[in-house]
Figure: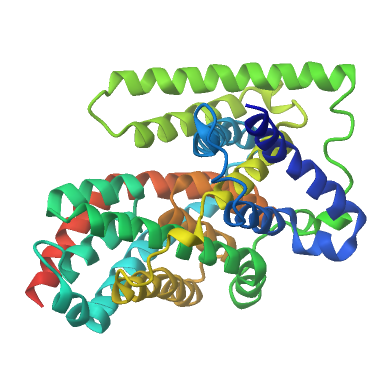
Length: 390
C-alpha cells in the first residue's frame, strides 16, 4: 500500500517539479514539459519499478484509474476558455477528410509492401487484408474499433494482442517525434495560424498557477471542480440513455458538448485557472500513459512484417496529411491535431494541444475524433474486403 501511495504521489507531483524546472532552466523550458514527462514516464515504466508494485489493484490499476480520470477532468476545463470561430470550419472539415484518406492510402500501400509476407505465415482469418482493415479502423477511430473489427473479421486473440502492443510502442514514438520536432517543423512548412502569445516556450512564461493556493484561488478551484463534476455527471447520464452505443464515444461527445455549452456562460467563462488546471491534468496523463508503454512486452519475433505494416501506416499517413495540408492550405496545428486524434484517439487531443500551446484546436480535434469513432468500424470492414480482392 505504501508503494502504491508513493507511486500516485510521483504521478501527481512530477508535473509540478517539471514545470518548476522548465521555468528556471531556459533550455529545459524550450524542450517543454510534455516531452520531458513522456521521457520520465517511459523510464519509470521500463526500469522495473512499476511492474514490481502489486498491492491491492497494483500499479496497472493505478495507471488505469489515473489515465482514465485525467482526460474527463481536463476536457471541460480546457474547453471553458476556448473561442469558436466559423472561419476555422474549412480547415477542420478538410483535415477530417484528408486524414481519413491518408490512413486508407497508407493502409493500401502497406498491404502492397507487406501483404505477401504476412499471408505467407498467416493462419485462419489472420490475413494481411483483415489486418489492414483493423489498422484502418484503429487509425480512424480508436482501440474500441480495433476490438470491434477483431470480432467482425474473426482475427485471433494473438494477432489482436500483437497489434495492440505494437500500436502502443509505435504510437508513443510517433508522439515523441511530433512533440520533439514535428510541431515546429510543420509550422515552418505549412500555413501557421497559431496566436503569437501561445507559441512561446515555458521558460518565457510566468507561473500560471501563482495565486492558486490563496483563499480566492482555492475558492475558484472549488468552483471549477463543481463545474467539472456537473459536466461529467451530465455526460455519464447521457451514456445511460444509449446503453447499446459504445460508452467512450457517447461519453466524450457528451462531455465535449456540455463543456462547450458551459463556456458560453459569462460567469463560468470568466473564471481564471480553468485552462491551466486542465493542462496540469494532461501533464499527469502524459507521465501515466508513458509509464504504461512497456517496451519489454514488444514481441519482435512475433511478426516483423506486421510491425512494418503498422509503422508504415502511422508515419505514412502523417506524411500524406502533410502533403494534403500543403496542397489545400490547411494550417499546421489543425493538421497535427487531426493526425493525433486519428492515430492516438481523442483523449490525446488535449495533450497535443498543450504541447502546441494552442487551445483553439481542442474542439476541432475532439470533433474529428468523434466522427472517426463513428465511421471506423464501417471503413475498416470495407477496406478489408477491398484488400482481399487485390
